[in-house]
Image 1 (tube, rainbow, N blue to C red):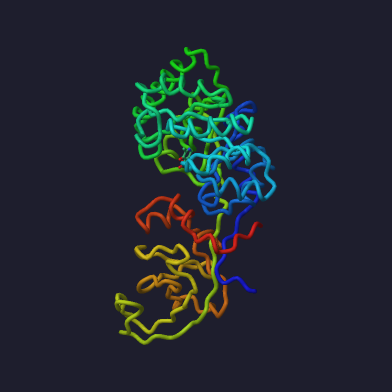
Image 2 (spheres, rainbow, N blue to C red; image 1 turned 45 degrees about the vertical axis):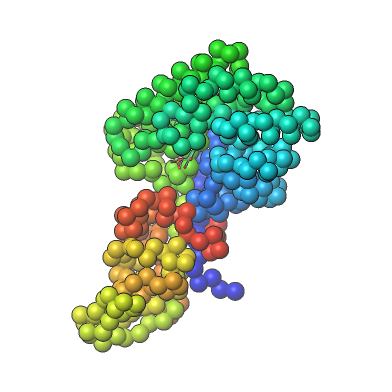
Amino acid sequence: MENLVWVEISKEALKSNVKTFRSLVGESTILCPCVKANAYGHGLIETSKIFLESGANWLAVNALYEARTLRESGITAPIYVLGYIALSDLAEVLNLDLRIVVYNKETILRLGELSKKSGKKAKIHIKIETGNNRQGVLKEEIVDFVKYVLSFENLEIEGLSTHFANIEDTKDHSYAENQLKKFNKIAAMVENLGVKVPFKHSANSAATLLFPETHFEMVRPGIATYGMWPSDETFLSFSSERDVKISLSPALSWKTKIAQIKTVPSGELIGYGCTYKTTRESKIAILPVGYYDGYDRGIANPHVLIHGKRAAQRGRVCMNIIMVDVTDIPEASLEDEVVLIGRDGDETISAEQFAKWAWTINYEITTRINDRIPRIYV
Ligand SMILES: Cc1ncc(COP(=O)(O)O)c(C=O)c1O
């Protein structure tokens, strides 16, 4: 069956980004790209395989079902689960040989009992609260927490982790520096208990790019491994503060096809709510993509690319349809390819441009492209 809406993923771009990250972190640091949220919209299984083939060591997912999907696809590489796992699901962590982040004593107790019963070691990474105030164990609680873990013989503290709260939204990195100081202090408290922790980790994309001192034994970059900068501020900080040069390659293009072209007289209203009125006789192309697919309904004055030219979107985004003005693209015809995100001739619509139209961030744009839409690896 013909695809009417699809996402193209450049394998070369993904490979090149992994190589770039390897060059930034060196050979001995574990490179653990985040493939949660359907690999930021790029397709969980295929993207994970491409990352591993290109030199990534581990994979990070958010949820148990994502880890299970990867194992079922035959991936045997270490998988680290960043999100919460229900107490009743913890047995699967041992069965699938996963590493998980922990920050609740209830999780420790249940996992401790399960690992004792099964004789399988459970590898845990303790999340340390340093200023994000979401997951994490407080400094005041860490000694007691670690002692509790040590009371279970089959629980192995494989990692200590934290996550930066304010590293990509700003060029002032003092908050992140403070978090890093706290992390180092709390890690020392843990090590003073006689615990040798193989993997400390803190770095998302921005930290990996900007601050080598955040790399420790492992990095967990997400957005930049897909070729997108975490923010303009990260790009500017990198360009002005680091003496290395890199280029990231955006891997994702989002495409559709023209489903109808019609001539609409001047003064006609287009779409729900009659929000757009034509000011000339217009050729309007109907595209079979809408907010169900992830094309944001709140988007302001976007355009798409057809034959390398911009076509402005008209009227409201519908559930399954948008309308665009092709009056100045006379060559446009039925089933011609339309670029929603990506390059066409000399024109490009980046995920960042799309995010600005939608008052959000590139992360949200690519992760919200409906999982049902086929991903084609080119
Ligand atoms: C705990 C954790 N680590 C790493 C990442 C990757 O972040 P980024 O995509 O900014 O590199 C995320 C993303 O949300 C995260 O939640």
